Amino acid sequence: MMEHGSHLRLGRYSNENNIYFVTTNTHEREPLFNDFGSARIVINNLKLSDDKKITSTIGYCLMPDHLHWLFILNDVTDLSRAIGYMKGRSAKQINTHLQQNINVWQPGFYDHCLRQDEEIKEVMRYIVANPLRARLVDNIGNYSHWDCIYLAEID
Image (cartoon, rainbow, N blue to C red; front, side):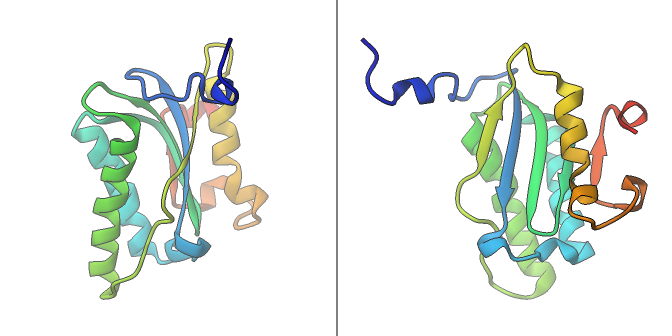
């Protein structure tokens, strides 16, 4: 018999080569990424995570107060460490950039491991449409803080 509540944890462990959809918020949902420099720091750290072979990014959308990131977790670390690496480095750099000492990220993150029956491009369309739904822009081409390997196919 399965322990009560353990069915909720099925499939929620870190597994290399799985595709993860991660959402993480800024501390107290502060719109820190309205600052272009702070936003680019986060995006550069996503790219650094790929360069260090921790992740292989499929796409992301950085909103003013949260990040949606879709990636393949490579075999060099586990999910929590991969997210912690990105958040820790970016927080330190943002504090330097802003000349402050603030909490940048809310502790923890939401993750969803995509299953085989889930359509990656549909999840990516959802992620990319965030600035449209939030009415930050009328056309996704006018929003600076997103990217996707399926760029030509998402529009």
